[in-house]
Image: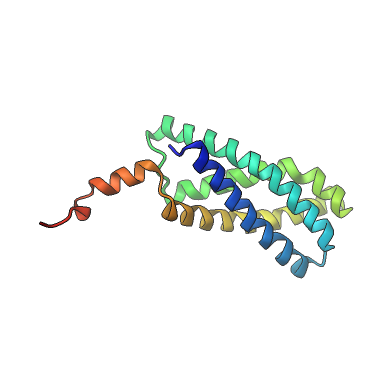
Length: 152
């Protein structure tokens, strides 16, 4: 499993990149006030950072218990992204409605659009993160792989 320091690095990088994309792209695409989007982005980022740490810890423990490994297949990555975003959507819905001064339904539609973006972004980010910073188990498997044996 990943170390606490690695999980913190993962969460911070994920949120910083996502925040830049949310505020910049969101203002252009939705027409909502950049300050409201900025506030939503910052609060969402803080909530998501905490949720990211807790969710990934629970998810990895569940994977270890059910599969005996934390190595994720493409299907598991997709499930991971969907469950993470569903939980975050529930946590943030009232705040988004209040900040944008819209109904819960409108906030839900806005949040759903953002969630779809973050599902795709989360999948891509986590794939890239795992390539840049492989979990210890993946490093050990790669070192044992016959294709990695050096010829004499």
